[in-house]
Image 1: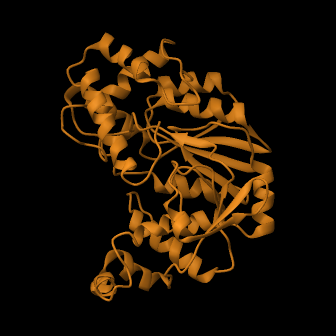
Image 2 (image 1 turned 180 degrees about the vertical axis):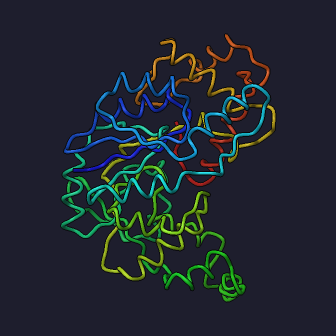
Amino acid sequence: MIDILIKSFNRPYYLDRCITSIYQNVEGNFAITVLDDGTPEKYIFKLKEKFPEVLWEMSENAQKKRKSIEENLNNGTEINGFEIPTKLWKTAVSNTEKYVLVTEDDVWFTQHIHLSHIAEEMEYLQIPLVKLGWLGIRNDENFCKTGRLSEILTEYTPKNLFTANKTVMGWFFYNKFKFFTILYKLGLVDNKTRGKYWSINSILMGLYHKEYWLAIWKDATGKVDEKQQLRNAAAWYHENKKVRFARTSQEVMKTTFQSSATGSYHEYDGVFDINRFNFILNEAWYHDNLDAMQNYPNDFSEEYIMRFLDQEKHPRAQSSHWKNWSEKFRNQYIQMGAKIN
């Protein structure tokens, strides 16, 4: 059994797309569980009616998060997007069998894939992580051992990646005792070095051996800390150097650069309100006016989204402001090498 865990918060119009794409494209023995952090209940009820076989688990702060959505819509109070339900996620992964796909509500499958076959190859080849999507970024080809492992998997194992125990990797990522600075001055690292560690981690599109995922998230306590994740991944890899990392032969998952769960990570100009934007699209979806699979397998078309914004004409979610916001969002990832269409 492969468990597909979907982290979710307040974007049922994307969650609908995510789940629908799974049933359209994924084969194998799998079960879907949504790990929700406070989506309003009326949206959840609608999704449960459409997907009765999907399981749901709620975070301990779900009710508080629902209230924060109401307060945001009523008086503009910020939603704290830096507070994440790591306890829920870790408990859910701990309760899975051996291999688990941990993804998010704004990610969807674009092509056919057989997860059980991939898990079988992971077992045979000692692969703790297979990436199913990577945003078209291929920078790691320059520092990874690559090669065909099978018809469906390609190896992407980093070469000459500095690893050590957790303590030393903590010095490295947090520059404790000026450790990274010293290595930089010696010419042993540069500004791109830390980014190479993403070759052994995946936030949105990774099929994991559960023990590896749990090792990466072991120390997480309710907040985002990517340095902590990479530190733990490197320390685990240091103790398990015989493993290999891999990707599917082609990308089978993609995500959006047109929306975000909150504005915490993508506050560019203070004019556009992503929470109001989500409310407008949530309501259109709830009343069956928004088709969750519009323009699939690509993201929703700009014209389609703008139709709902232009109908609403909310001063904090105007289509021109949204286009400017999403362009800045996309450019962040384009500068990292992402291929965005």
